Length: 282
Image (cartoon, rainbow, N blue to C red; front, top):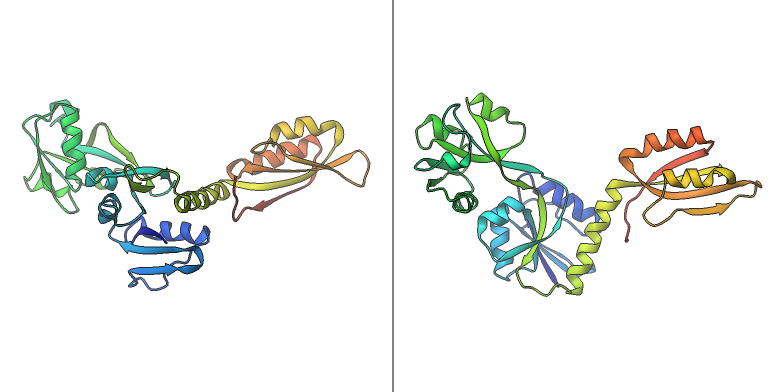
C-alpha cells in the first residue's frame, strides 16, 4: 500500500485534497481525521503538519508527500522534489527598512529573522555572507520594529504587508516556491505505485489546462484550421455525411479557447464546441 503525506492545514491543504479528489482518491470528510485508507486505490493518506512532511518522507517512514518547495529545502531532509503541482506559488524574499542594505552581500554582521532558518542559513552561506539568523514562528515583519533583527526573510505575495510595516523588498528572490510531490532521496524511480500516482496527478494538471474543442469545417480549410488546433499530437479529423465537410476534434489550452473559437469562425468553421476534461492519461 502506498503511504502518502498530505498537508493537514494551511494554504497547501485544501488545494492538495482537491487535486487528489480529482485524481480519483478518497479524501477525508472530517478535518480531525489523521489517517485515511483508500483501499480501492491501495493508498493510505497521512494528514500531517506541512513542515513535518519532508521529515517523514526523507526518513522513509512514508513513501511520498505533498508539501511546498520552501518547506522541503528548509527542512534539510533527505527528500527530493519529483513533480510540480502548479498551486500555492510564492516568492521568498529579503526585506528591511529603506537605507539599511540593497542586496545580500551587505548583510555581513547583521541579524536576519525568518521562519525558514534552514533555508536562509544556506542561502547566506552560499553567498559567502557572515550574518546571524534568528528563527521566529510567523509575523516576522515585526522583528525589525522590535529590534530583534535588521533584515527579515519571508514569503512575499503582493508585498502589501511589508510596505505597511515600513519595509522594502531588497535583492533577488531567495526562492520561487510552489506545491510539489516529494520522495526519499535515492528511492527507486521506477516504483510502479509511485508512477501510477504521478500519472494521475499529471492527468489532473493537463485536464485543468486544456479543453476539448470540436468543430465542423470545409475540407479546403482543414489545414489552416488544424494549424490553430494542433492538439497534443495531432487532431482527429472525420468526414461528415454532408460532402465537402469534416469534423475536427482537438485539445486546446483553455486560456486560449475563446480566441481560437473566434479565429475558427472567421475561417468558416461552424458548430464550434468546447467541453471540459475531467481526467486524462497522455
